[in-house]
Length: 131
Image 1: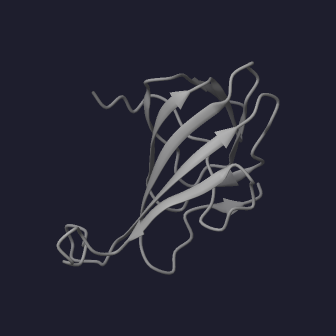
Image 2: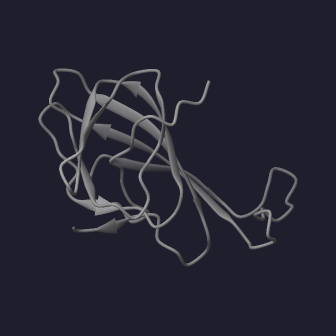
């Protein structure tokens, strides 16, 4: 079940963070048909794998596009501008805050792994670095 309860302090199309591996970027489906949103706008879907070692942080950033994820392992603490803090755990699905600066910290002893999907458009970054 999809639980939009937490967030993904996650990363970028151009990895400024070493723990990002792009898994897929597509503007067409498996049959070659263009992917479009309900209003007809062209879509570009990107998927990445985030890997954070214990003690790592991914720095302040925000997402101008809808961002979703699934936590595979570890525990990620996400700090938001304004002071809110959320914790993400294995097996949780996440809808990340859009347009809100945040950063993630792996404060645990286990590697954090998260699969992330961005519902973007060509020419629009998935992540903007900085606060």
